[in-house]
Image (tube, rainbow over all chains, first blue to last red):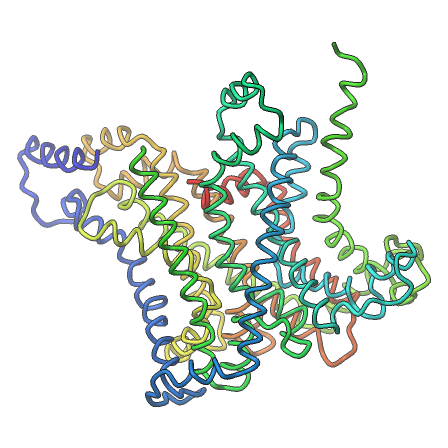
Length: 317
Length: 281
């Protein structure tokens, strides 16, 4: 298909009896220069504001740079110090717990919600619109209301639990380390669930109806149809959604920063918030950069898997 | 067999199970709104039912916000930054998506992969070195810092979305135009873009939303109070010390979410298609 365009252009030039000489008009007909001219702005943006900062970040992580100082090369010292630091190991553990729990919740609840949304007939648009809302409002601001809902003295959650006589005391949601982690996971799930539901819904819509009819005539019940038709066919979409969300859940900053600032006792710090504290608040850019680079392996893994999936899909096309 | 039982069944198997999800999604936003409209006397009275406003609605928190804080400056700053970053990113995105969708050129595949990888880079990975870069460019503590850095995550998104969209447009219509003597730029602007308007709207909506909601870069790169954006202003300027003015905070959160909610109500279908385009295509 793409070759055809080149041939078309050459044929056209030949037909008009023109040589591909200078001048803006001709310049824009030829493919390669045109392509480079068009991608130029994006290319330089990625080069100077993504690739260069990334290299800079690698350098910082290998240096003892502080705010305002370039620092000198210290090898893997920053990483060695981090792996001996209790706070960092806690952050590492928090990140794993937070990401695993939030991803599991979002996948299971997202699947259930997508299956429900798929069957809606009345109020379809209204309900879909309502459940998508948490994903589009500014997270930093919506996290504020969650803070207010779990605030020690006036918590509406505690008020409800006490009114229903489920508990008779105020649950310390945010001061307690484990409950704080639970709250942070809850808010992340609240925000990310719509993305899972809506994307899985789009995947469900794409499954041909005939497969369900065939499965039904073979005697498969609703549960059998779910496991033998829906899940296998939804696997690619499911994989993309989970991988995509894995990066952005692990890299979460807003929710923890607003809700707990990483506390109590660093029990909710994630890579992003701890890197913020180290790099900006205590000025140790080298250490901060080293922390944020721990996000990179998962990014690489996801890119690798997704590119393989794209290639595979392209082969079947 | 259309017995009443059959018509009522979805009520229990479908609409009833979906209700907890709707409630979960909407309650915090509802609670945000009513908190912002309650008088302080009711807000801090633990004996009243917190779900309703019983002692009258007040706009006091909003008035306080307007008079005593830089709230409207933050609003305007957010608007300026979001509009500027959106325009820049959509234009760069259109230009980059076109050759990726239509032309074959050396390095094209690698560039496509680079765009895709950048699309997956979370802002929290690069905020430290970027703050150094912004500093060296002399842009820190100005809105330019944000206008320049937001495209780093907006351009990959717009390019990826538009690339998918351009590929759905048959290229024959362009070939006709080119035979008529249009060059690539003219074909793109006059032939492809008019057909791809929904894709462009979708990219612009998402770019605006992502810019408006951005928090980390705005927090790190801009420190003077009067230059802060909405999200950072509300979080870092309204929370001072240990006493929280929850009414005011919620009023700020409401106004800060409003532009996005309005856009969302009008363009719901674009949001849905943009959201799924990234993952499904």
